[in-house]
Image 1: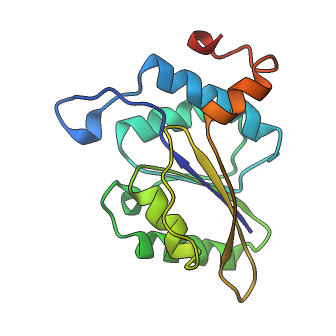
Image 2: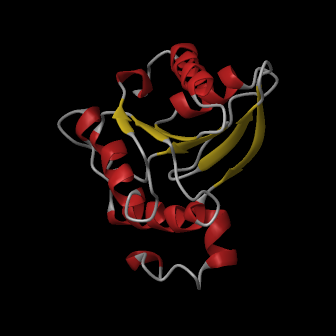
Length: 170
């Protein structure tokens, strides 16, 4: 099973509550860039799990313009300060149901880093840039393997031309 863990796009610094912080224009465009890049690697996600916060829901809206998904769920287990071990258990349970699945998680710092650490105990929690995506591979009967972590700052210099749909980045 492949697990892709993504941090939401850049969000406005303030709102009436943390849960209501919206994406900025740059956040939408960085997410657009990452979505187009990721769509070249994954034809369909069998399951997408999204934090219920506004910025993660908006991140999924941007992603869904370029990525196909069979099932999308909004999960309280993916909020910024939720328990990463519980979120990891949820992912492992989905892995038991479909060992060949591609699963996408859209969440926040510090959750995304702690989730990687929980699934890959030999890996320290990485720092995700906004719209950053990590890929983990879950092996049957073993822990997950940390494959890579990419962000828009890495993708844009190398792949700027194929991604013309991202307004403020062009």
